[in-house]
Image 1 (cartoon, rainbow, N blue to C red):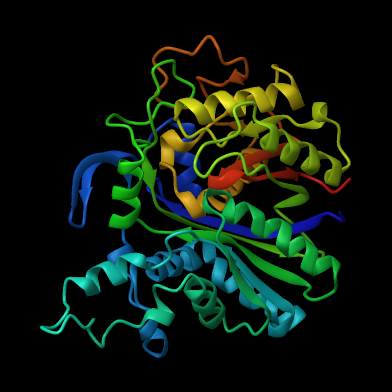
Image 2: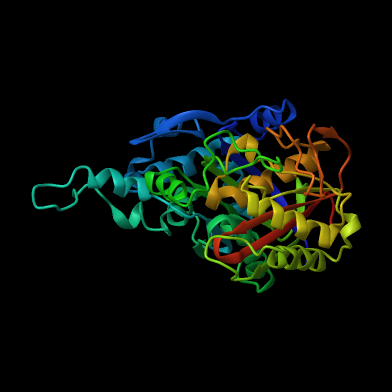
Length: 394
């Protein structure tokens, strides 16, 4: 693919709002996870809850979109002046030439869960529930496009945890096809009871803080987040370049990864091929690394098959929690922070390294100049994606 300029990016997670807050937490190896309840889900789990979401007030003309997911989306648009940067791009390209491609999984389900608590005597949901503007998966893309005043194509990808990584590939195809000249990509996913109880029922949530790559790892910690990047056909001073995006679908199981990481390896190889790079060109890999026994083992095999066992890598889900449909965008932003600042974050919470895992996992942060980084995102059903970013276009 022709490299795409990343002229702006931002993120909001339990670590805080914006690049500076995130970088400071990563460099200090500080987690945003805390043991807490959420809404009516009194599970006492370790969660990564974003601060300030309930304080966001949407513009009056967009009030029908009001729900936690869209408030979180709006918080992200304000971080690092991202929304203003997109408006500047719209002056250059025209609002109809900028696409909005976002990933999410649960979208605004929380709003419907709340509405169910307020049904009338007949069981009817309250008139205040605006399903199309909140619960509907397309809601977040529709809201972001309206909030930014854009008129280009917009859609949502919902492929579980690979959602907001796959939108980078989708945007690249749209630019290459000449449909758009720039795109807002990323993802937004907020917590809700369906997510919390669903993962609990699958026995995938840890009772302790998540421990990716630990010998005793036993599940994930859930989080929420919003992340955006502005991709442009060209830019005067880009912060990074999207060099390649690889996708695969192994369809091994509804919720378990292929045990040998076959689909994950295929996505990584496809990303390298699209970037025109050999595996040795990558300096750091942000792992999907959820902390479940099967996922980490399968990913480790895939990484070893593609990169060998010497590439520095880590999972940052011990910092943010697993932000599900936003994870690809959040970890793309973290990877670009690493690239910009010559910094590789540590994987948190490892007490006993798993001797069966062979990857060069980082237990301490490392300062080192980086030229190319990659980020993995793997979703339920074997939907896999890998992104490759560089400091310069080859």
